[in-house]
Image (cartoon, rainbow, N blue to C red; front, top):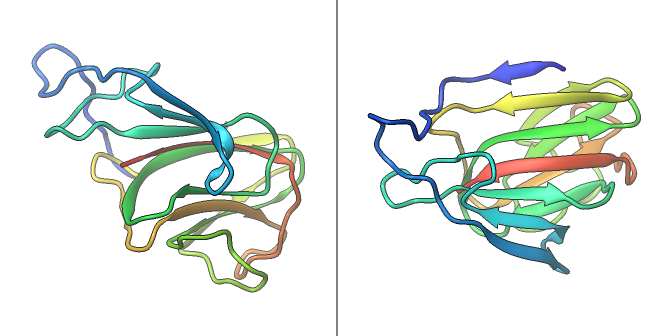
Length: 154
């Protein structure tokens, strides 16, 4: 499994600031995707400076999802795909339209999983956070409902 690590995120261990957050499930949301949203963690995501990261988990294969429809910071994501294509990250408030230019692009091989960690501070997205699959690298071309996403963000 490829791992792209853009820095180290502190963990909530003894001696580190923060505490383990509580879970808050939101199942599906027609305007934001059909996945599970978690606030806090089943994965020991620490609360830092009063901010608890949230996690989006796909419940079924999908092509794109609006993870957050307001400004936020993406801390990392895991994606897997049944076909070779590209995972696009957008700073948008809605799903991309054909030929939209992504904020970031990551190649993914067929039947592979990629893990991207943007480090402790993450990558700010001024409009919102959208993740999608595409058959083309430089602009968005819908890749079909064949990806599962796990996105950590604040």
